[in-house]
Image 1 (spheres, helix red, strand yellow):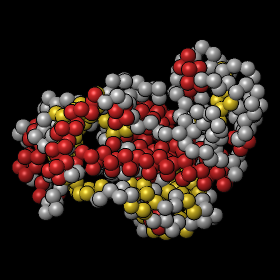
Image 2: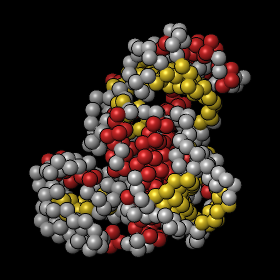
Image 3: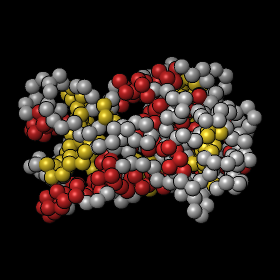
Image 4: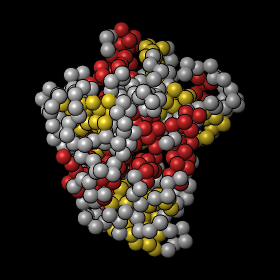
Length: 495
């Protein structure tokens, strides 16, 4: 590969996702990671239907289905492990086309993503590369040492910092993390493999206990995860021996016979967000930009959403289709959602585990009532991205309820899904399409799309599936920057 146009620092799920999206557009991309191979320890275990939809865009949905399992919902339990409330996931497939929640093992997902990345001729991954210097600005510089200790200097057009919570790239752009008020907590994370049938309900079990809060979930055919809050005088080392761990997991397993402990580690969960995500052509994604407590399972998903929001913009800027200023829309669009998810996770964490003995008593009274409150079930289980605010790439006008929202990923008349058609598209309900030459999908016969569009005669979609603008018959689109070139793919009428 010749000199890369984009250098991605960090080959976790966020960095590899960004690289795949860029590679699918033909952007020459180099990924640098300090680990020679996939980091073997499992971390994330949950993703939602929107993120699963993105995996389909990356081309790994079928492979992911073979190594994952749908989540059954959420069970809230008291300190005595008595069930206080249960919220079942009743929808098997959402409007995005996938299960509302899915459990998985992160190293398995990362291996799928790396295999997909290797299929793209425009992308290269170098493991064992220690990036030690990034210079931000209009002309970024990246310096790294390879496994042999040889120094390299790159001058790409764009640098993406996907290098995690202790990000070097974040420091390079002069950004700092801002705390969002959730007190840092130390938790024990335990991953176990066993061929035993534990006989447990398949959803997430949350023990609401101010003394020893805990979480249990099944993440694979023979893989299970527990998380427990550590006391001030405890560390993960205290539970390295199975006999010390057994009292914690006994409510689910009885004895520890036949269990293989894959990991027993300590994590500190934080709620933070970077004050700036961009300096010139150097940008932050994933944990480098935001850190989310685990209570709603949105940590890894937030990073993949970052990549989905940003990659097409970078490709269009490098191709000369969009002005560089539109890169400012990345933080403008993603930061409010990331902040909202962090605060929601923090609130859920405090509500489930805070308050001391008084909190435990209140939860015993209040939580059993929750399933009977109208609309609460959907709020607890729904992680739908809220509408994006107005930006250079979202024209939200008065009366427009669609701009900034994610379009349903419906099956078209030819059997393909809407996301299978690349690039910018215009959905047309009636009358002539607006005069900006977009590839057109006629929604006649697509009941779900017609109902979703409501009174809009046309809806203009961005490559990430977000509605850029919509309008009545005869109205002209206003986002000139998104008008396609003649070389862009054109869909036949009728989809």
